[in-house]
Image (cartoon, rainbow, N blue to C red; front, side, top):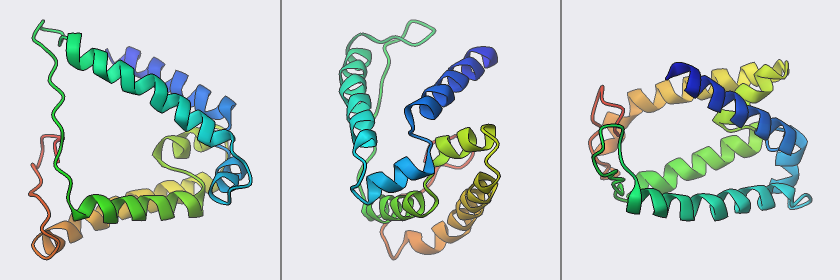
Length: 148
C-alpha cells in the first residue's frame, strides 16, 4: 500500500510541476491577476473532483465492502481565520504544502524555508489552539486519531 501512495504522490507532484502549479511566478501571477492559467487548473480540478466525490459517496465502498461514508465537518470561525492565514502564506511564499515538496524535489533551496515555516506554523497552531478554543468557539480536537 505504501508503494501505491508513493506512486500516486509522485504522479501528483509531476503533474503539479509540469502544469506550473508549483512555479512561484505562476502562483504570484495568479494572486496578482496577471496570469490566469492556475485558475483554469484549479477549476478543472474542481470540475473533475465534484462529480467523482458524488459518485464515491453514492457507490463507494471501503476495502472491507462497507459503504463509504464521508462526513461533513461543521463550519466555524476557525475555518475563516485558517483560510485567510493559509491564503496569505500561499501568496507570500508562492507555495502550499504540495508544491513545497515539489519545489524541494526540483532542487529549489528556498522551498526549505517554506517547509520550515509550515512546520513551525503547525507547531504554533498546536500550542495556540487550546488558548484560542474558547474565545473563538472552536471545536475540540480529537488527539491521536488524525481527525480534527
